[in-house]
Each structure stands twice: as structure tokens, then as C-alpha cells.
Picture: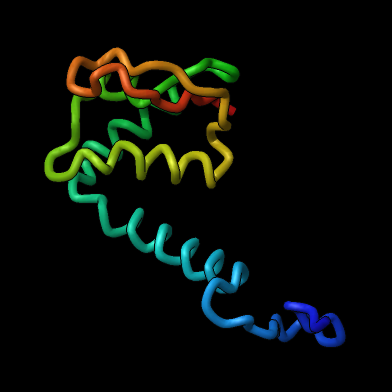
Length: 120
């Protein structure tokens, strides 16, 4: 059975694609698409700056949700997807880390689950 990765030359990052359903290609392409979408969703840079200053003002270990950010600064102009994109960026940078889930307090979310984050 062939390996997905060529272990003889790891620096070339070569893999033998298995075609449709290749988990390596799916991961790489999905990750790149997610990063691209996160960059493209930012339509209100002023809100992003205020939100980032808010996060920096929080104490290490404090638990926060997107509801807390929206309560502090409201929703951004344009797409509300900016909220999730910003939390994704903070997590990738190591500024926050996953701390579980809870129900949203915002009426518009109809008690759906939201991620709890710990400030790092």
C-alpha cells in the first residue's frame, strides 16, 4: 500500500493524491479557503480595531464569548460574520483558546450554542 506522503524527500512536501476524497488535499484546500474567507469578510476595520483593544484589555484566563464582544461594541457594519472571523483570527494567533460552549444570551441567536474562549 502506498503512503500519502513521500517520506524520502520531506522538504518537497510531495504526496501521492488518492483523488476524490483525499484527506490531505481536503485539509489543505479547506484551510486555505477558510483563511481567505476570514480575510475577505472584514468590512468594518474601525470595529475590528475597537474589538481588538477590548480583547487586549481583558485579564489572562478570563472567559469570553462573541456575545460579550457584541455587548461591548455592537455588531460591525456590513457582515456580522466579522465577529466569528475575528475570534478565529485571535485563536490562530494564540490570543484566546477554546474553553467550551454555552448558550447565547442574545435574543437574535435564539439560545444557540456559542463558543466560550479563555483569554491567553
